[in-house]
Length: 387
Image 1 (cartoon, rainbow, N blue to C red):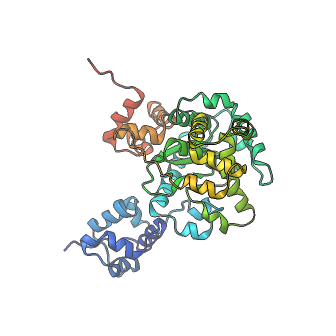
Image 2 (cartoon, one colour):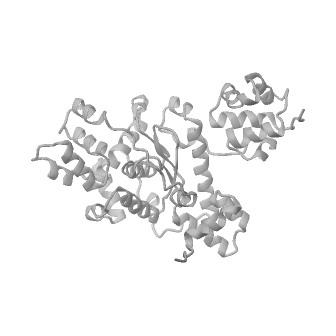
Image 3 (tube, rainbow, N blue to C red):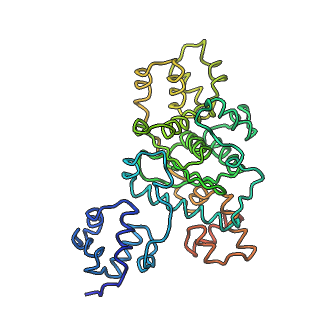
C-alpha cells in the first residue's frame, strides 16, 4: 500500500471550498478509486493522508492547483468572487460553478503577470479607466457618447467591419489600445458569457470563446461598463438575479446591459432606421448585421423603445439558441493566439528576447509547457513552407 503524504489538512479544505465543490462531489470524481465522502473528510481533518497519486489527481484534475501548494502552512492570499463582484447577490456568488471559479483564478494570474511584465505601469498612452468614471445617475446615452468620443470611433468606423468576427477583433484592439486587456477561454458551461476584474492599472476582461462573436462584442462593452463603475462584473445570459439587488448595485447591473446596447446601437441612428417602416424578422436581421450585433440586442432595443411588447419580445427571442462555435480548427497554437491575444504574446516574448525572463518563466507566463514554446514563437515569426 502506498504511504500517505504529510500535507496540510487545512489546505485540502481550502482548495475544495475555493473551487466550490462539496466533499461528496470530490468523492464522486474519485469514485473509480473507491474514495468515499468519509475518506475525503478524513484527509481534511488530518486523521488520514492521501497518497501521492491521490494528491496528484486532486491537485491537477479536480482543484486545478499546483501540487506543492498542499504543503503550505496556510492558504495564500488571492482574489475571491465576493471581493471581485460586489454587485452580485450572495446566492449567485455561492452558486458560481467550479469552472467559473477556476477561470476567475486564471484571469487573476494573468493580471498579476501583466503587473510583473510591465513593472506595475500600464504601457498605454491613455487609459480609459483612469480618465472616465461612470456615475449611477448619468443617462445611458450620455455615457455611451462619452466613451465613443474618448475612443474616437465613429459609427461609420464600426459598421465598416465586414462581419462580427472582424468587428470583434476591431473592438478588442481598440479597447486594449486604451488600457484594458482582453483574454478569452472556452468556458465549457452554459449561461456565462464573460467577466471582468477591476484593477487600477491592469483591468482585465475575460470572454467566453464558445459564444458567437456578436455576443462576445456585447460582453466587451458590458464588462467595460463595470470597469468604468470601478467594479468587477459577470455577464450572464440570464439576468434574473438583478431583481434581488438593491440600490446602486441594481442600478449598476441594469446600466451595464443598457450601456452595451446603446453604445453598439446608438438610439438616434437606430430610430431613424425603424420609425417609419414595418418591422419583420428579415429587417431585424439586416439591422443586426449592419451594426454587427446579435438579434437579441436589436429586439431588446425595440422592447425598451416600446416598438414591441414584452409578449412580442418573448415570442421573437424564444427560438434563439446559444451559438456554439467550432473553435479555431482544433489547432492548439491558434487557440492560444485567440485566448491570449497577440499583444500579450508579443509582450512576453519581448521580455524573453531582452533576457529579462528565462525560458521556464516564458512558458509560465504563456501558460504552456516548455515543449510548446517553439510553436508559440511561430505565431510571431511564421516559418515559410516550401512548395
